[in-house]
Image (cartoon, rainbow, N blue to C red; front, side, top):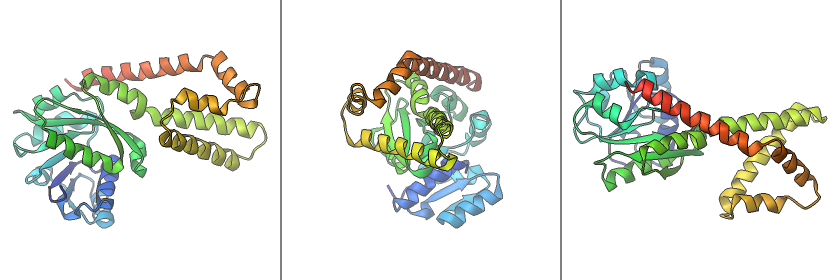
Length: 273
């Protein structure tokens, strides 16, 4: 695996995080090449990770076994059409662009491509990401293992069997970090209103979230049971949980996540034309 050439089209934050994760896992830097039109970005990637860089997409993919499309969804069609004559026929294509379907990418790239779609999230920047993956028809077990190995460099990986479920993945994990940032923001603000200084309120809120998540990771107990264990009858936590329930927190979360998934579908239709 470490001897395979991996080409990144696009050198933004997500590509940088994957490159960094691979290098930390002792992937050979000389087998990684990133293409981007921004020279300072390429210089920084080369200096930080010792990888190869190029401003020409076609040269970057020439000998690639894996091509990771890490460009913005709005640019995907133009990038794919330009790459079409230059992609090695056997290359595994991994798209991390939100909303662009396998059907659209295949049409733009031409021929029958072995294609995996990935929905990562921003905690990948600190190797704590959660990525949803879907393998299009024709992708082999070995190629799935290859895609999983690459994305596992920045966090955990979960496969879905139906491409449409990537919209749900977007609602849960793709956009999910923003939900927690909002909740942390609200917690910190409430702490300040109750007398804590802003720095202390932020620190306590963030560390509490990190600790709760780590506890949930370490214990396979149902989330509802973990909540109940903290919620003593007649205690302080019970009062807070009751207030959340009375104000329909669950319904609000459900509505918000459905709105997210619906927008993901709308963008897929719009950008896939």
